[in-house]
Image 1 (cartoon, helix red, strand yellow):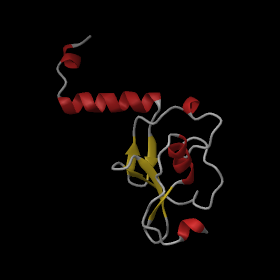
Image 2 (tube, one colour):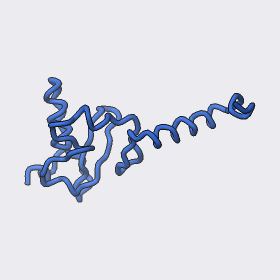
Image 3 (cartoon, rainbow, N blue to C red):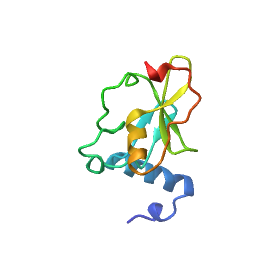
Length: 110
């Protein structure tokens, strides 16, 4: 191992870690950036998943916005309103969490 590898700055170490994670998967491009440390497809096999196997719903074509504060995925309608992604909502419901409350303009009910 070279000396250079032993003397990384925190920024260099972060870039190295990000590169390794990209190489191993687990990263999804979303409307507000990159979501890292995404679960593997084996963990959602057999269910709808907004990342790996989205169900057919009217919001599929809308951009995804990750709500870090709530840990949820939203679909952003043409009016700029975030609506809970139905597949993400179903995941949270299976875990006993209600993530459906949002400032709604009615677009998600179409």
